[in-house]
Image (cartoon, rainbow, N blue to C red; front, top):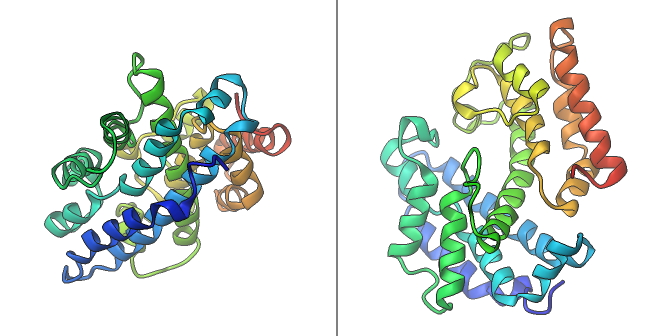
Length: 277
């Protein structure tokens, strides 16, 4: 791991995050918020591993390992990327942005207004806040600065890797928070949205707004394989077996077979060749 990026070095920031989340402990039915705390620390750990693996990447990414501020911004952005989820849930009782507020914008505003990174350089603060603001975008701005793109990609990969874990746990069980986590979609085992399956075949990332059924969530997760940017993320996903579980739960309908087969082929690329280019 990069000598300047060790999880232990961020203990004060992790405590700052916990102190912040503790102010929401009296929110009724706060189990989903406790899940967000767990999610945050797992995303943080994933980001540390991504940054620590840069020496194994191709040249453009490998060079980023030598920029300590860049790597630090990525890890700090991962730690605070979902801080807006807490006021979002308190006010709106949902994590569905379309029915409340863009949680990334709220996270950016919370991070900035609370001055969570007051000890950091202006460059680190700016890059981290930019990544937090952009981490949930369906597509990133094409003219985004290369450094800002790198920091944002770290957060997006780390975030997705843990969301795979979360979604699989809720897709395979009837846990109390299941409806909130799966954004209140319909649980009809043999149903899916044709437009989401078309996204798979077209190589597009599916949109949350198009999800109507639990199986749409499974297809959405599959499309995320297109977007994973780091070899370590792709390897971890393939080795975790999570995507295998997701695909095994999709309907066996002939009409869905082409989309499922494409996702299986993508997963094999991750497994056999370190992932997608």
